[in-house]
Image 1: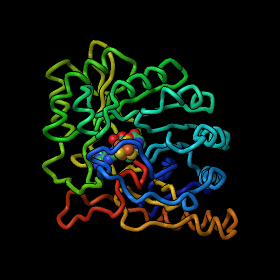
Image 2: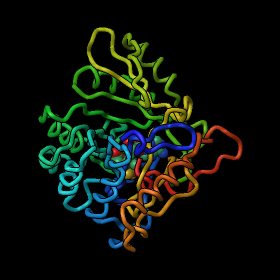
Image 3: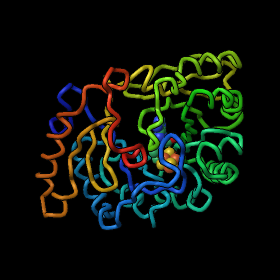
Length: 331
Ligand code: SAM
Ligand code: SF4
C-alpha cells in the first residue's frame, strides 16, 4: 500500500475525503446560504450513488480511510441511507461519518445506524429557540434536539459532536448554555470560527469570535484542561477538570492548521477541491461519464492533489473569497 498512498507536493499524506451528496438544504443559515437559497444543481448534474461509490473505491485504493458525508444537507438526498450502506462496504474505509443539521434525524437515525454510520456531527448554533431561528432562518430547535436524542439512543454512534459556528456578538451569549450541554450529555460540543465562505458575503475579520476568547469564557465558568491533540485533528479539545464532558475549539482563522491538513473534498457534481478556499477545482465527473478507467481517474486525482494549496490566505491582504460558498463545497 505504501507507494499507492496519496500525497501532495508539500509532503502531506491525504487520508480524509469529504463528499458532498447534495447542494440543497432545508435550512438557510446566515453564515452559509442566502435567505432565498442558491441556484440548485439539476438532478443529472449530481453524481449518482454508483458514481460516488466508484470514486470512493478509487480514493480508498489510494489510502483514503476517513470518509465524511456532508452537503448541503445530506439527509435531504433521497434514499441517502442506501448510499451510506454502499459506502460502508467499500474496502479500506475505516471511518464513516456524517455532518448534518439534524432536522431529519428523527426520521433517519435508525436507518443511518443500520447502514453503518460510525460518527455524526450535528450543527447547532444556539440552544435558545428564537436565536436558533434567527441564525438558521428556521424555527427548528426542538425538532433538531429531538433528532439528536433519537441518534443518541444508538450507543454504537460514537462520538456525537455538536458544532456551533462562532460569530462575534452572537455566540458570546451561548457559551454558558453550551458548557452545561456538554457537561450534562454525551455530546462533545465544539465551536468553529466563522470563515469567509458565506453566501451573503457578509464575513469581515471583525465577525470572527476567536477560539481563544471562547476558551477563556469557558474556563471562567468551569476549569478545563487541554487534551493531547491527535495528528491532523482540526479541534483543540479540552475536558472539564471534574471529568464531566469535553469542549473543543476549531480555529481555522486565528490558528490555521494547514500544515498538517490531510483533507480533500468532492462536490455534489463531482469536482475535486483540495482546499476549502481553492480558486480552482478538478472535474472528475466528465472522465467518469466518458468511460475513463480507474487508472486514468487515479492519475487525474494524484495530479490534482499534488498541487494542493500550502495554506489558506484568509489573513493576508488581497484574500479573495472563493466563488463557491460552504453549502456548495461540502463543509
Ligand atoms: N447541512 C449540514 C450541516 O449544517 O451540518 C452539513 C453541511 S454544512 C456546510 C457543514 C458545516 O459547515 C456545518 O457545521 C456548518 O455550521 C459549517 N459552516 C457553514 N458555513 C460556515 C462558515 N461560513 N464558517 C464556518 N463554518 C461554516
Ligand atoms: Fe444548510 Fe448546513 Fe449551510 Fe446551514 S450550514 S444552510 S444547514 S448546508
